Length: 257
Image (cartoon, rainbow, N blue to C red; front, side, top):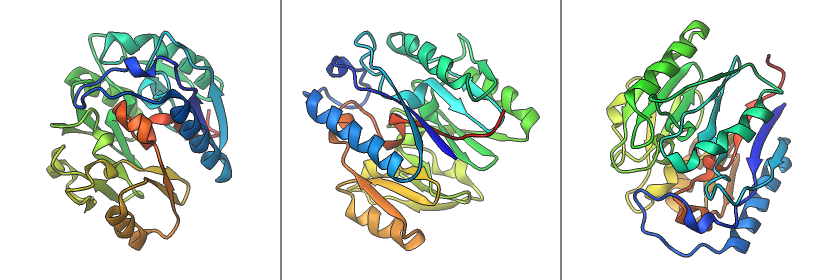
């Protein structure tokens, strides 16, 4: 069974951290409705959803993906790259400890879950403004006993690796090569998003279903040739906060210790 950990939207989401986008007004009510639709889609596809309460002390708290990286064997609590977000992890750790052994990456190492893209046992980690080389090395040390390989990827023009890259299946990635180093994906099948749909490279996998953002018709057409099980979601308010589809949940399989 698939589980997903989500967190409600902070009323202070308008004060979120921004790196590459200019600040725009975020409609809190619309963001809340879009989040409810997101969670509803997860449930529709058989995912058991746990939704934590929002905290107005943490404007970015709905972007739970960054606080932890969950593998079959272990949950890794991250060391986030900005001070304003480091308090978010405690609630995430408490919940994940019900399902996984938990370990932590600590400062001065920095890593955020949004910089991690997984293709089966191959883990790609973005070297970004939020994840440093020590964070990547610490994650490699944690995962090596379990047979994972870790490959660093330079992130040039996006907040996280997953902003510009996602796994469509165990062998195929969807990427925006203008924002990351595509050469790092040697040996992997690569699909490239159109230049006029740069944000479409982030997707969300729910079993055999791939969720794409609305307003990316050319990407939708391309991905549908690979997989006919497609869902589309509008997350316009979260996009203003530099968020993407995968940012809003931590999806993992139940039944592993």
